[in-house]
Length: 185
Image 1: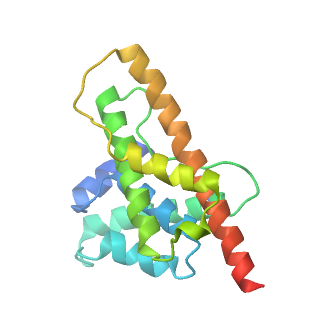
Image 2: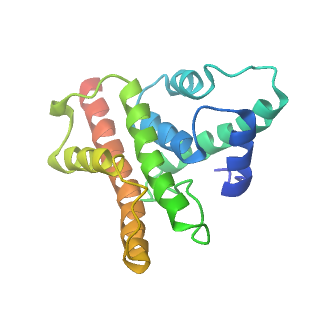
Image 3: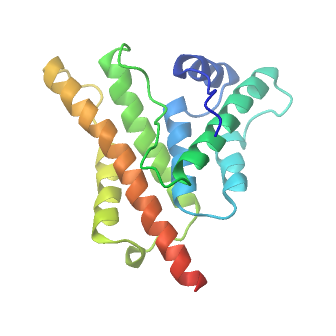
């Protein structure tokens, strides 16, 4: 597994400079959603989702694409291990709270979009836990990022939401993998 991913700020600037339609958090959410869907054609779905409207000759896009392809490979490797780990591409804790909340919301939106691209999500495919996790992601994707409340309480809530993201992704991935195995037997 490649542990040499560019830092969040570097890759985020590359994504922005390349003029992609998504934030880095959304792009990572899309990658996770596609990968968790257990779609065999995930590289095609990834390319179509993230780079469909991009100019292939753009030098800035090429730089961003290299880092994003590394991110996809890294995320795929994480999701295909027995370890319960998934590193989310979110701003570090020293970034402003509003930016981090927006990134969590964007990651959830990206995950739902990427997961939906595979087109094989029926209610019958989900256990109660994975179904609840999917509903949680929908709620997180609706976060109001404009409200200003108690910062300390918001920090704690954001930490919990960030943890909920990776737990939800792993639950959904597990459900989709077990559903895929059952249809192959």
